[in-house]
Amino acid sequence: MTIKRRDFLKAMGGALAVGTTETQAFQREAKEMPPQAVGMLYDSTLCIGCKACVAACKQANDHPAEIIPEHQEWNEGTWDSAVDISGQTLNVIKSYQNGDLSQKDREINGFAFIKRHCLHCVDPSCVSVCPVSAMQKDPQTGIVSHNPDACIGCRYCVMGCPFSVPQFDYTTPFPQIHKCQFCNHLQAQGKLPACCDVCPTGASLFGDVRELKEEAKQRLAAQAGDSYEFQRGKLGGDRPSHVAEIPKYQQHLYGDKESGGTQVVYLAGVPFDKLGLPTNVPDYSYASISEGMQHTIYKGLIAPAALLSGLMFMAYRNRNSKDEEDKS
Ligand code: SF4
Ligand code: SF4
Ligand code: SF4
Image (cartoon, rainbow, N blue to C red; front, top):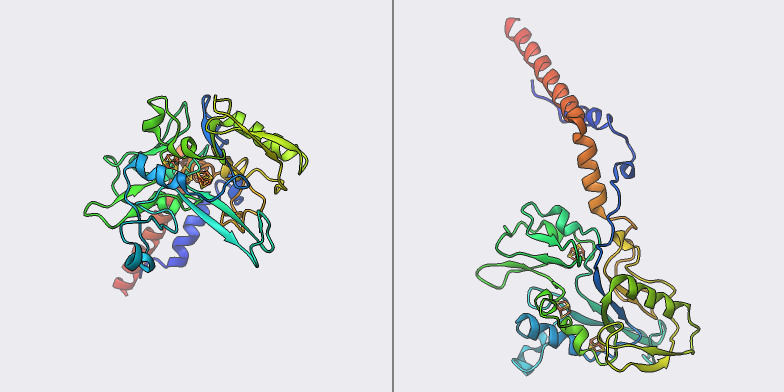
């Protein structure tokens, strides 16, 4: 006689019932933003879709142009036409288009741009699921970086990221994970992340995350049509700003709460789901649940002990019934 799957699951369930049945009750405390957290405010309404940031990102990170198969015949080697982030493209500008496209940042008969790359989560799932600590979050700046020498290519980070950011590059003999590391090599030299450095309108604005969030909330609080001074490069930096009208924003700062908060935050005129950002992401990080669950289950080894006892009891019972069968 063998252990039935139902009996096994019952034993598992019994062990887990030592804790609680409510998943969120397992949640550990949310992580705080690091003290010198750096980040980016991407304001979609300021983005003109020039893709200077995409080219600068490639240059700064030594990535080749990516030509999609449909474009290969007529522009091979002359134009980067990546349609999404990939192992060769850490940052991409995508567009939303509707109807006659007559007005920017309007949902109906309009168009808008959106920039996609790593959001440098405050409590990153990619770091939590990595079994060899190849994904790390800097305790001071909060930059989430990947160490290719430690990576074993398990791709847990690819599955764990709620924003589908880490990309596994299958096109090379030694496949690797790639994602935006916030140009930490440039920041170490006192330079700006390449995308923020080249952005002509300040749509990609670098700075202290807390200050960037304040700036974003100030823009949200202003009246549409009000004249406003938009900064470029770095918030509080010395580049000349430009004055423009406050657009009709969606009254939401994306990344303020999503997944426990992110260090890259977004403003937009078109609903975020239309721009392709996931809007079903909870306000807590997946890491806070999975790590909380692990700690609860293993607390004092009570649950594993209960599970082990259950399994031993079933094995003992099965063994006894087999002996009885042999005797008869
Ligand atoms: S967006 Fe994804 S890859 Fe970037 S830090 Fe968050 S979980 Fe990690
Ligand atoms: S911070 Fe650097 S790596 Fe990240 S998207 Fe910008 S240019 Fe690319
Ligand atoms: S450089 Fe600035 S304006 Fe141009 S596409 Fe990038 S974010 Fe938009």
